[in-house]
Length: 266
Image (cartoon, rainbow, N blue to C red):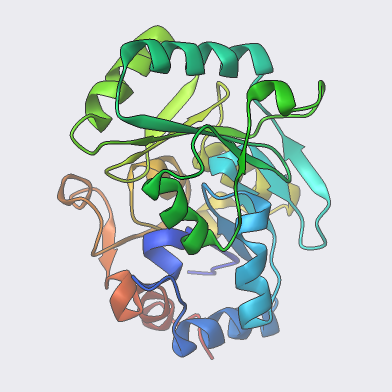
């Protein structure tokens, strides 16, 4: 096949369990760029959670953030943005609070990450992973007109499925997907990684069947179904593995191994 573009999730995919990229994977990305093959980050993270990766490994790339709600070009220009309204986020917070779950909420804009409990160990862990500090606050702290890219629930793993079912029933117009055993991503209707990948391919006039993609969790399903050559990481949930090509785990350089296997590395 004539592969023309590569998309990759970050956590559980591009980065290993220590949230670092192997030297082989780093060199593979730079190899693609030398060949003129675009490498695109596709993540539930916001831009500020991706920039430390660029600085550490000395490369830049276009970013599809918030699972498709925000697309930035390589130079940081906004290509697409579709956020959740402040009233909707306020409603989400009220509903979750009234149910009394062990759940802390997070609101993301272009540059800010607002949480209700900065001392929550789940927030602290996420801060360490993405190398960004959250800010304690409320939705009212967000200026009117500023888009909210994503609302995130950090849940007790025993309650995640229950919270997901509740939110999907109460807010059928929103895009709600589980990205780990404790994380629920909430975006505006019609937002997912697959739609964003297709949009990006159209912008570059690349047939989506000539695209390669890597992912490891449920919020990657639409992306993997969109491209011609999808790879699911070995560390993905077992119930996803029947539908996609499997590469090695994120701790065994799965992205590098797959790119090498299909002949994309010179």
